[in-house]
Image (spheres, rainbow, N blue to C red):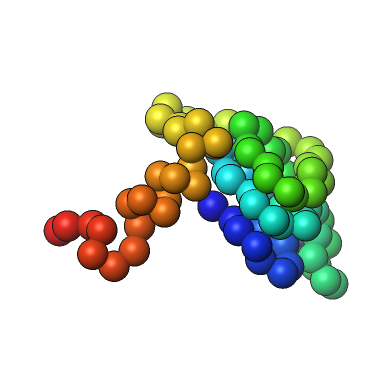
Length: 93
C-alpha cells in the first residue's frame, strides 16, 4: 500500500524489470515510472492496481513471467487488509 507519499511509489531503473501488481495507491501523484534521476529506465508492467486520488503511472516493456502461482487479494481491499492486520500488537507469533 502506498499512501500520501511526496515522491513516487515504484521506479524501474537500469534495465531492471518490475511487476507492480495488486497495489493500493492513495494520494500518490506518481505511483510508478521508468527511470529515476540519473538512472536509466528499466521495464515495468502494472496490472490490477487500485488508485484513489492518484496519478496513472508510467509502464513500458515486459517482464519475465513468475514461475509459480500465488493468491492475490483484490487491490481495492489492500488498504483495509494492511491497516487491520499490520503494526504493533496485531500479529501474534
